[in-house]
Image (spheres, rainbow, N blue to C red):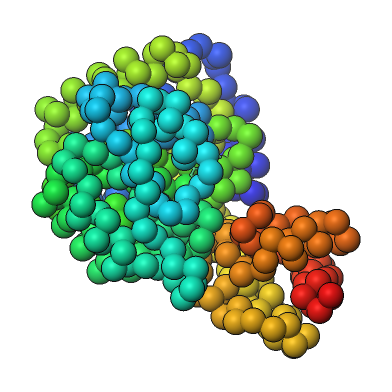
Length: 353
Ligand code: PMP
């Protein structure tokens, strides 16, 4: 992003040391991350009841969270959505947890199975951990509404399971504020919860490993305890985080002109992906491709379940060099004005043959 390049110029000129960062990373980064994920005026921030540490990407944040939770909930299961991002399984299994699944995506209706989800979450025992996608569910692109988040947060308070929200796509759904509806629901209900956030996508900082693990507790005293456990967990995995990506994010968010530029660039990415969703559906319809693809435009984020069969997926790869994940998940960000016609033609041919 241009805002990243501008921040890097500033940082390069100012850099005066290659000393280690603190175990939890740069404090300005943590403060800016909290404003982003909770909202500047959030009571969570004013009460000082959350702590945040820089982790190497969203994956690193999930793993730190997993290892920390294992210390306190050694007999817990981790509940993942059906389906979920494949790496969730590996991360939490490696932290030592058995997994269980809760209902999420209904392939028949191509939408959220909220009834099934509620039923399953009501059956999760106290002390188990429930991993939720805060927005832009990967792989389905199907999200909860703000009301549905409130219902899920109320279930967690009633049943006593531990929410862990994976927030890898803030700003790719509806916008920074709307995308944090899930976080707000859990913050309002006052339960302890965990958030892994990633700045790989929304700042385009993929190779800088820029993420954060946050723990929300009932009060500042407990937050301090949580930070001490977070640091002990991080210390034995990677000691302290890489500096560059966090400094870039902190510089952008704390510099008004760069922040404005970032918001524009983020909206540009979000709107471009949305335009590609529309272009894909229109392109397929115009070519008479059979099937109902309308859900592609109602799903959010970078991914969609296209509904393409595995046979078609394989044909596209073998004959057209178009790569779709088995199960039909497409990455909309891979579509451009230049290749959308080729992709629609190829799908039309694949579904005819
Ligand atoms: N969670 C989800 C749902 C993701 O899709 C991803 C990235 N694909 C991550 C976490 C990990 O993010 P990072 O690349 O920052 O490790």
